[in-house]
Amino acid sequence: MYKLLDNKIVYMVSDEVKGEVDFNINGDSANIYHTYVDGDLRGQGIASELVKRAFEYLEENNYKIKFSCSYAKKWAIKNGKIIG
Image 1 (cartoon, rainbow, N blue to C red):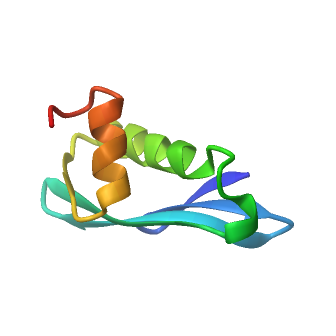
Image 2 (cartoon, rainbow, N blue to C red):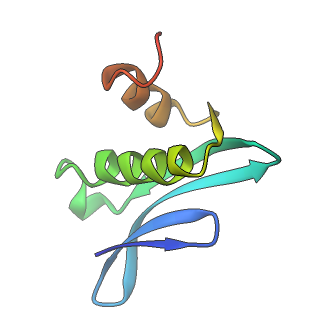
């Protein structure tokens, strides 16, 4: 289950956080700075879904999105959200 908590979106299994994407909000800008998925769940598209949901939330709320997380930046380029 995916859930928005404060400045992060988490992936939970049995009430335990197994993945997350973290972002800071400063005025009208948001910086996605960290993506993590537990090792036993990697390769299942969870990180991609976390970043997608973060983008949806931030875009819906009209934030300018920046990156210090390389995974999120690569995802944004791959999915046409930004031009490399």
